[in-house]
Every structure is written in structure tokens, then in C-alpha cells.
Amino acid sequence: MTAKVNYADVEVGTEIPAQTYHVDRLNLVMYAGASGDFNPIHWRESLAKAVGLPDVIAHGMYTMAQGGRYVTDWAGDPGAVLDYGVRFSAPVVVPDEGGADLEITGKVEEKLDGNRVVVALTARSAGQKVLTRAKAVVRLG
Image (cartoon, rainbow, N blue to C red; front, top):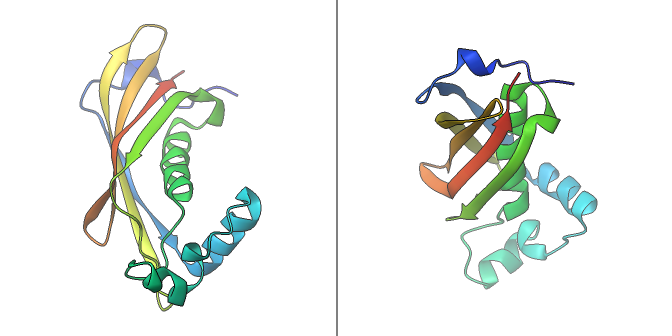
């Protein structure tokens, strides 16, 4: 599979359309099962609040995975992502009623040799930035 986005069609500053991913408690339980991370702060409200959190929070790696999903959906090929890293700046709080929305935006920050680009990502939930220094190196078609 090759990326659907062509290197020649993007420039530094090209913005990737925003995507919103809804997160609810079921997503967290499914992620816990897939990852093996059953820390109760991700599914048990009373325990999350007992340790000082406002409510249940999404797994950091779940949040990071949504950023990876955003980039691979844009590129059209999961194999196009060559490098990806983030720093976690705030948790995604997931109330029982209504869940939470995670909005991700991206911008081409740099064009590299070999049809590669650096994409800078911004992820926000409830108006708060939840990922910082989020960048992916992607090989385009």
C-alpha cells in the first residue's frame, strides 16, 4: 500500500482538516482489554476521584493512538508513518454521561528528502491541549 497523498501536492503550512473522535467509557474498556492496562482510573469513577482526578481519564496511549489514526487516515496508508512521538500535557477526562470529544488538527511543518514530511499535530479535549510536541514523519506518494 502507498500513501494516497502526493508529496508534490503539499507544501509547508498545508493544513490537514480537523477530525473529532468521540471517546466514551466503552472505548476505554475495550482499549484496556487490548492493551492489558486495567488501571481503574480509566474505568472506575470513584477510584479516579479518590486519587485526585476530576473523573475517569482516557489512557495516554489511547489518546496518542487517535493521533496516529488521524495521520494514517490522512495519508491513506498506516505504513507511511515512519516516526511518531508526543508528550502528554493533560488527560482526556471521560464523564460517564456523554463521554468526551478529542479534536485533532495537523499541519505540514517541513518537507524532507525521500517524499517525507513532518506533520505537527494539535490535540484538544474540552478546550484543553492534551498532547504537546506531537509530530509524525510520513512518507507520501
